[in-house]
Length: 308
Ligand code: CP
Image 1 (cartoon, rainbow, N blue to C red):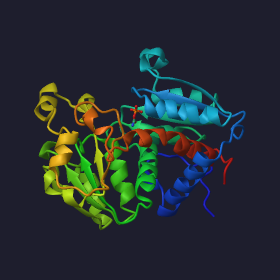
Image 2: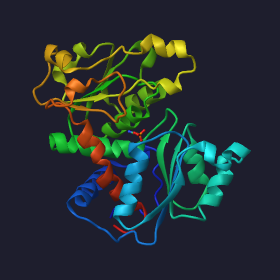
Image 3: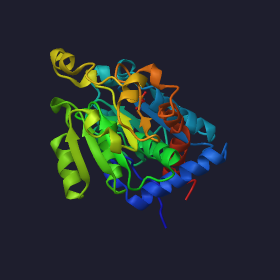
């Protein structure tokens, strides 16, 4: 019997394959059914110390669609952090105001610190360049919908694999599903050593290449990522890699690819993916973002214990 009641969602590595599949099953149920009252009386605190559109609003919409309420903030400047209050003190106060905390923070480890400091469930909505586990459940759900299964797929990760927290979490998750992974990036934006070592321990099949043309013909899924400008210590380093990858319909037409290749992207996009792709059969990224609602409904309902 799987129970996720009161479980923190900090790293995708905290979830077994069975738990991941169970979350996807409940997400599909949430997409089919409406549950307008199941979180009546529950309050979610959305604590966003970094910008967000999809994650914050889909958590808010998910909570409200199930009858719950939402408090929180979306910029550090309106909080007592600017007076010098520590994150630990802030969250120890906020836990008295709500039933669950959803935290996005610029520091790696901020969600773990929060979970260790409070007695209510904590959801990592992105911590620095580390992980973004709820995006991964959204990504897996989108892959499941596109391909009917998440086992045995060839998945290309394109772009900023150094700072791209969604790529880190997804690679870990796919290690449960016999994926063949291709990490496509310039050498300076390769998947960090810690992630590579963990994938090796897990005996995952992967290769690292510079160009999509080296692997495109075998891919079932192409997972594009934005180059994370805000995480570069020096602007000149960003300028060196800016615009290095630009997918467009005409580029896809030139590549050798499978007819049923699907392109995912956690969004937002900047320069790496042209709007000419949007009307193609490859584009899955808008449906992927919309899956944020049923997936986050499932996560909230499971962690708050109203679905077992
Ligand atoms: N995918 C994602 O995390 O988007 P936001 O930054 O808009 O939340």
